[in-house]
Length: 436
Ligand SMILES: [Zn+2]
Image (cartoon, rainbow, N blue to C red; front, top):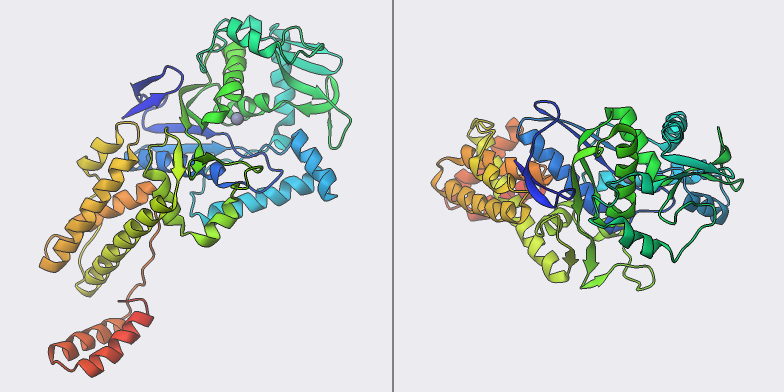
């Protein structure tokens, strides 16, 4: 298995920290609003990554956080006339509902900042004790200049960054690049820390939650490309300071989403909420649209791409449905194949989902041919199901009862006897039951 590592800008052989186990963390949403379709790309991408590792036989331990303490939440609380907790709870629930409607995976941990404040205080204290952070008037800042590898992820050197940061000079900071670990505020919901009332900095939350769930280091840290700098760079800086490691061995970033060639933004009016998008689109089709482009590349959503994905989805659905029927009517044994070398060849090279979709369509063709010749249906069906599961596509088919099977056999008999009038009546009944 080879993964493109953003940290080294190379495709590298994947070596887990613990044999047969993968620990993964993906930055989750700041819960002050409904998420947009761009926020769904990391979720769907890293579900696929987890699915593939499971297919390879790994135990996957996956965490993704909620940023439920943030200035944006304080602003939203004022606007909505409710408390910060009510804002956070409302949008956490909405987010989880969205994930359900996209058939996303259940994951192992969804930590919240509010449950980690004690850990955050200890973490910041340790950084201060080691000289990597300093207190100024109730704020605590990270001393970037003390980390010699700062810029390792985003490939920028400190001098370059300094000149960029100088535009926005904050007199409370020793250096413009320093970032807040703790910010003094008496506005909205705030918390009493060893440095007074305030709220924690976003970059600290993620590191602390990773450390408290997994320990000092994980295998894979993921997120959207927009988080690479400064968020992920600053997570790494804190981990280098405290634990002398890069927090994760592999850093993975998914590309952003464009709609018909333009970046999604509120001002352009092409800002699509995930919950609105799924009203008009099947979850499988959305996933196929996403996976037709490699996760690292920018994804351009167009009507053409959607139409193509719809056709793919229908073809997979129809082939699986016919196979499912044939398997049940003939009592065939499925589940014999759990590994397919073709899948490994495609996916072992940094999760090449566009090629996996091409392979899926080859399997659909093969399955349709096998259904006609009534040979090798189960093997092809198994392989197709493996692909479908890795991509997180969900197809549900009815389980046939005895009477369904009788009805089906009756239909076949009537057809064979050329009694098309009665066969038609039964066909309609079979169709209404979702069997045909
Ligand atoms: Zn994060």
